[in-house]
Length: 223
Image (tube, rainbow, N blue to C red; front, side, top):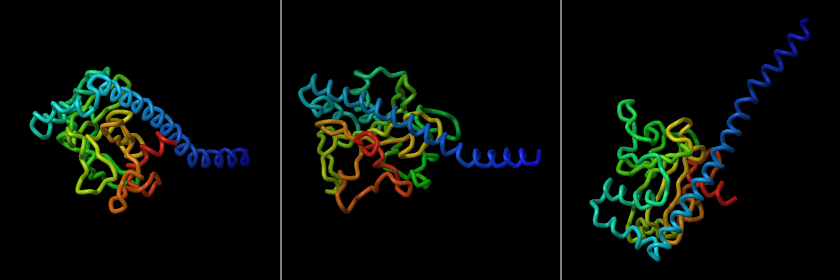
């Protein structure tokens, strides 16, 4: 009997050590599959807008007439919303005083992949959000309707704006590189935020556990 109890105790210890890691791996696999699905939806939508207007820039140029900030970002989001089936759009992408006012996670609780608080440009209170039927929450920000945004020469590309997507909505873990990812909207296409897009002076890091997790978008979509 004692030997049986010892064996069961050992099994229990091993299970307690390995089961959480296994569950996390299963969840990550699900998150990545959702990321790829959402990316496909957005890429197809971008192509449809180009088909309608000849260039993506032409399709969003009217947003320039809107005041910079939330109104302009609403316009950017709504260009996509005309092509995407969504549950609803959300005007305030954050939770204030623990009261849910949006479909996106509370920015203050979002973490980087390395566990640090995410004081990120890709979480912006002026951004606009959209909730998809599959549960994903998308955060839209328009940098330049002219699609020539290049912040003081820090980048190796020109972009129109960006989309931060949380593949399981406001539910945990709310971490970049796990369930939150960043996509760049360019005139030519929607691209995952990629390490190789950044100038040497502004590298964001890779998708290792010690990184911020921003480049996990390209790591999972392009591999």
